[in-house]
Length: 433
Image (cartoon, rainbow, N blue to C red; front, side):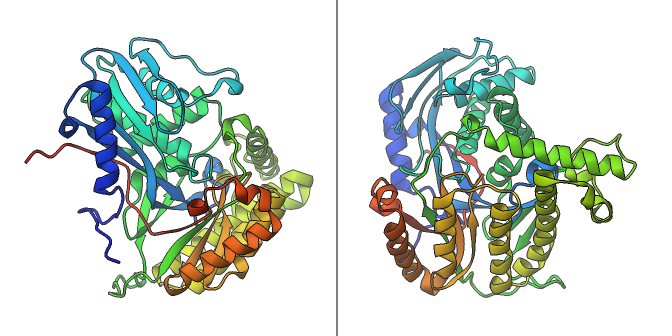
């Protein structure tokens, strides 16, 4: 099969997908379909660097060829008018309305991300004159799946509002704006992994993001250490296997509890090493200080710190493995990351662990781990290109044996997806011929 790609290399979104979104916005706005702009925000995976972004660690990221599309046209005034393919109802508000953080996470709904984007821009001092008429859609069955769909939605609204108001922002600017949405408006204490992946990824590369300095770097697949690049094609696919478990992460406070435990561990280690004046983040703890004082940590604090420092080592080793095209060793590191997430970070559930262990047994799989926070959603695997279909069939069959009820709730064509790398978020402007 020949897959069409745009000039950036990604096969997503297709012209059919773009056409459907443009048609819907044209119906809503009374404009011509050819005038509709489309924000394409891909979903992301994190092969290595699990749960260390909020501690200033170095994480890896890659987007895939699925994601969120937001078709829009600028309003004639300040009104925002939105519809969604996934959710019922029409959202209306004005960019003149002052947005305030949500105090009760139970009140978070699909419109919260649009209001959160406005809140973030207002917090930076922007007085937006124009709203948008927009239609947003993700991939059916992939919402709350551990692929950062919420970050993709928030970024989509940021890019659309900025575009409609002729506001120019760099990717790093928008990473910080998305943090305002997630941390301040929604109350989720996550780091910058998700927006960094969505805004900075490049097709064919693995992004390494230093979350302490907010500095990205890129390694091309099979790039040799001496700087020479091989000419062989990428010989892997990305397998996404869905558990059927879903929930809204800001409503699940177990995530925030683990972040707090990491900070407590950092505070204890910094105090023990004579650096109690530093911000209590594990990235500020020297590895040698951790080794010298880790015996002073107990229970959950010891486990969280052990995960952070072992995961940091795996990221460093993974950089070389990816750069040298060593998928076998990279896969081993990814699987070890998954095991540490279970044993040391203590996320996941019986169902997610079952899915992770089934993936490890699938033919052609180099390595697997949870995707996203690990409490629900899906697991990812890096799989040999030639065995991807066989591996997907194996996972479908084996997971249905242990969780038939959950599997019955997943659309058959979304139970296991075979994906390829994607590109970064962008606004696709109309092209007139």
